[in-house]
Structure formats: C-alpha cells, structure tokens
Image 1 (cartoon, rainbow, N blue to C red):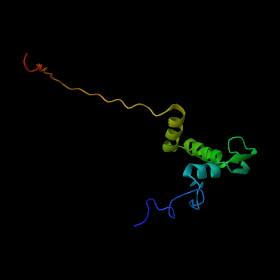
Image 2 (cartoon, one colour; image 1 turned 45 degrees about the vertical axis):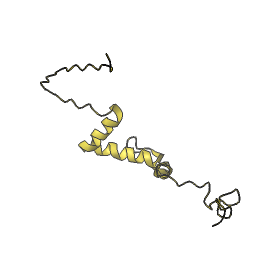
Image 3 (cartoon, rainbow, N blue to C red; image 1 turned 90 degrees about the vertical axis):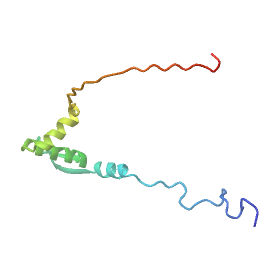
Image 4 (tube, helix red, strand yellow; image 1 turned 180 degrees about the vertical axis):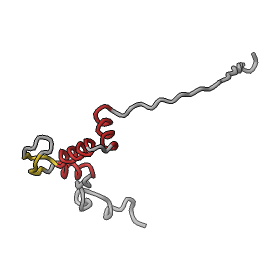
Amino acid sequence: MGEFPNKATQFSSGRQPENRGRRDISSKTILNRFLSIEKDMINPLNGLEEKLTMAEIMHLKQLANAIQGDLASYKEIIDRLEGKSKQLIDIDANVEQTVTRITVKKRGE
C-alpha cells in the first residue's frame, strides 16, 4: 500500500478536470435566447410593420385565439393579469374534544 492520500491522483492546481468552469446552459437561458429573437412582421392589432420578439408574437397569438372565442386562451390571459381565482371550500364538521390532564411528579415527592 502506498501513502494516503496518493499525490499522483490528488487534485491540485495543475490537475483539474478539463471542463472546469463550464456550466451547463439551463433551459431557461435557451428559451430566453430564442424568445428574444426579433422578426419583422405586421402587427395584427394595429396593421403596422414592426420588429416583434418571438415572445411578443406568442402573446399576440394567444390574444388572437382568445378574441376568436378560445376560452382556454382567454382564461390563461386573465389568470396571468389578475392571478388565479381562489377556490372556496365549505367544510362542515362536528368536532368533540376531550382534555386529559397528566401530572408528572419527581421521585420522592
């Protein structure tokens, strides 16, 4: 058996993994990058040609669907703007309570 820890296999400033410092790109970063891409197109609300981000285009599509009667699209928009509505639950219960008293005494008392 050799010396522990083995200096030949121990990490040091010269013996670092090759991918040191690299971070995996998160899904959020990737989506934000794609959603920020701009595209020249006609804004369906005002009829003018504008540079719109992919996120804006998606929001416009959601609005268009809601205007055409898609209730799921309408609900998503309202929930986003006003927050989801609270669910009320009516609970009717009879609860009986008994109190038990326990007295603990030290030995010799």
